[in-house]
Amino acid sequence: MSGKKAADDDFNILDIENALLPGKIVKRYANDPKGIRYKVSGDACDYIRRIAIVGRFRGDQLFRIITVYEEK
Image (cartoon, rainbow, N blue to C red; front, side, top):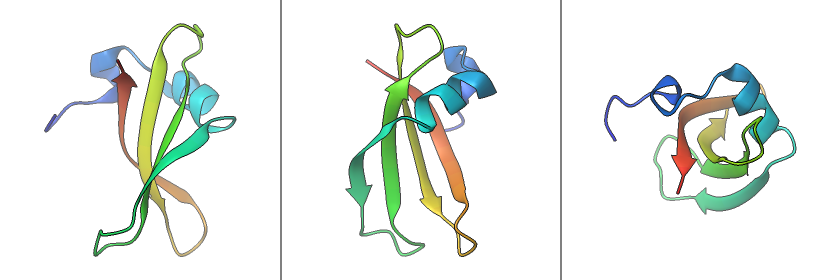
């Protein structure tokens, strides 16, 4: 999945917000030397496709998105 972008799956910022804000943390990756990563799952704006968002919290409590992809 190297180099793949949210736009490749036809997702935009509204889809990502729609999935992230009410989404659920479905997986926690604790063995990352850069810090814990979280996988959040939620719905795109069309409520048909599911989006997975992987990211981590920064020191200032902002969530930094690492990758976004469609869950099949």
